[in-house]
Image 1 (cartoon, rainbow, N blue to C red):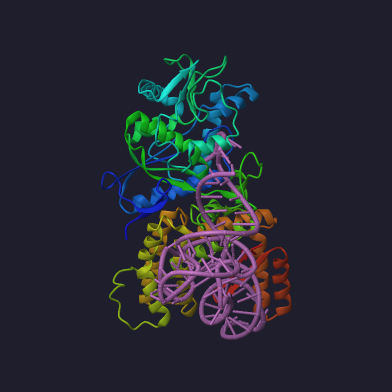
Image 2: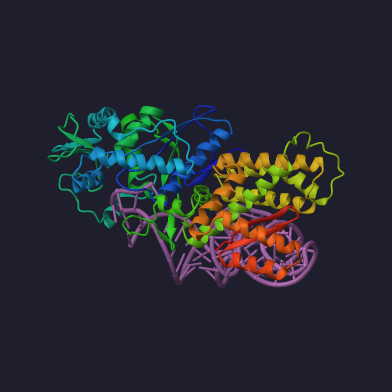
Length: 495
RNA sequence: GGCGGCGUAGCCAAGUGGUAAGGCAGAGGUCUGCAAAACCUUUAUUCAGCGGUUCAAAUCCGCUCGCCGCCUCCA
């Protein structure tokens, strides 16, 4: 099965065929660096990180560009408000963005250009558009004339007449058509500016992405991604100005991720219903947020709530716990020769063998179907259940079983690499998650272990009243005890 | 007003023509001193509603209801 991708431009899932065999060029619209990132930004970046990882996983050589928009009205406004140079704002939020992305385990793209580093490229494209008659100067501004470009609105599938009818924007008198958009903006006194054939000014919002995409990836690229809210006007305008300038298709596959919602409403700055990445990472492991973001298909809306995050945490915990067991039981075992293994296995073993051997294919099928991470997670849980079953039946497994467990861990970790989860050594993850929660609960590991010791002694003496008293006391503080023949472990109660 | 999307169990969520993955929560069981964890069994004769196409529909078509998004900065 080939990889199939939903293309916003055609409105269909299409087989993915890059223009150069074996190579993929991919551009994703980054953030405007004027404020903290919220989990909507986290989603977009996690989604395209998984796309990037998966494409490489299946053998493509991927060149991935993600920009920083570091000149824009909002940045200037903030700089004015704080009374600082705009670069102070952009530097600060670029650092924050990088820190957030790093925490989320987002791979660093091949190139991370900034708009201000490409003013020359931008001016060249705008000049070409003016020369070709697609753009016109009005005072110190340069506008793109949407009526000259026949295919305008092909991405968002609207038409100019309807847009005019529903327009809520005040129309600038100098525009030839109300929908014309600015390519180059004249600088007001005190604003950051660059020299251009039209005087001092700065780029309009959309042109930078065209310029950087062409600079690093060429005039036609394979994949361009971003949030659904960028379809219009941002990506529509990128297409218009790029294709008008080069006469070539700009992007072959357009990908757009759905929003993160709060109570079914889009999370956004203007509604004020957003959570920053940092806030969320104070409460949850970064992998929990990543896992949560991957529980739904990337194009679907995803509701952020405590309950949903807690469920994601429980799910990830379950997988990590199983991985830890696999690691312990399969220590030193090889995972060779599983396919021709003798049929002397019992039912549970046979099921595990079947599941583990078929897992990579199931995973790939899910991911090939427009990066269906929700389905991929289903396959992961399915395998985890089989593993747990085998482990529950045989605490001291035979060599063949240890080989099955070793392979299980291997295939799960491979899948985890693609999704950017299970990146931590399982015990280390579980310990860290526990420590974080202990702090919240105001109890220490030593305290718990002391009480467990005390309880073990009571149990040995068959003083169950005391034993249960200790257990209940811990439970009241949200510590759950897990007894096993190897001793007593503990975990934090899911709330 | 224009355009687009969504509605699958108590909750989250896959499934786009062949008879409903998975997770969480719930119930019963195994294990346990009792629990917890884990495992086993179980929980949608049915996919918002109504019609239609088809041998066959959650999946295609039409209508109705409800929710959401874009059309203004937005991941």
